[in-house]
Image (cartoon, rainbow, N blue to C red; front, side, top):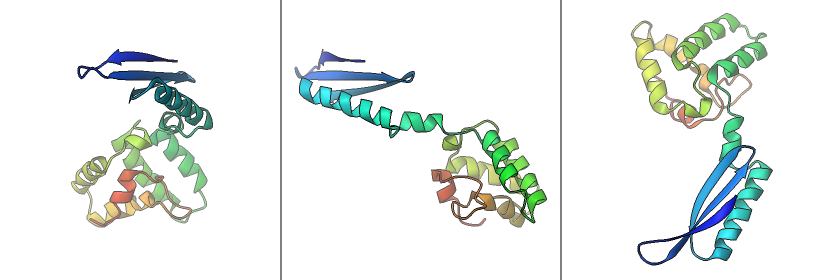
Length: 153
């Protein structure tokens, strides 16, 4: 933790604020006064301790394989359980050990494109029905990729 001053080419002073908490390091540059830099340092530390900072949320972000296994255990009651397992197998094969936050819209487009080479569009749509972010049967949590790929093929 600390605050370091550095002189910019314009002659002004910038303060580099560095905070470390639970082996995570956060760095910010503040152009202003030392008092402003201290306030930024205190705010970052408060957010880290409160769990509001993005770095701690990423630590709780599971990989797709682990999340898929937990999801499969939670929906054994479904009438379409075998279909769900089949769909999850294809998703796990394509996305592997990616964290859920790393799955982008482009990843889903690539998945659909590759999957369409071997099956019909309706099959792909049924396999991706778990991307829904509402209801008890939603597989993928609210991620930018899930929210933007709701349309059918």
